[in-house]
Length: 208
Image 1 (tube, rainbow, N blue to C red):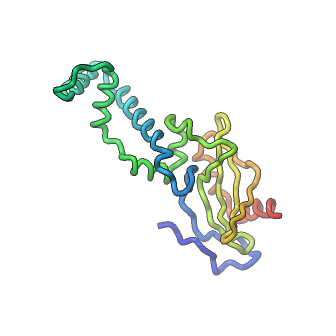
Image 2: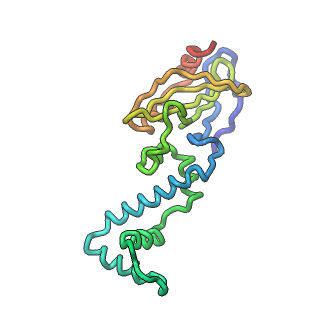
């Protein structure tokens, strides 16, 4: 279970930054996620899994598999216009793919993994709409702050910056872009390498 969020009573105003918990990753879609906004991505995920499965089937096994798909047709069926679609539909009914709600929860928990897959290519964030990949909650400069890691796709790399939100204050203060990596996991790893003193230095540099 995540540590409770809130003010660390042992922190002294102006003292060393103290961690008071780590919030779960926040997806790029509005929170809470509108499931309908990702339904088409889920269907693309399923199609990709079917293609991946069929690519692993030996050539000599495809004909028996197709015969099984043909024999599973309804007796009233008048024929098959698209043999590939018939085979894909048959595989989809038997492949143990997660239902939508399970897949959606995994997207919420692991957005960095999903966003680097082909079925998410048209859903990646751009500079005008970065998403919050991760959040840390720290006592910085004597107050509790949410430090958000916000990222977006730029060509073949991921760029990102920090955005600080004070608890109880709706305003956000962001840095310039300070991350540029090819993998989101690397960006997240660098974010967690920052200690409290480093976060305080970033925060001081952008406060009015």
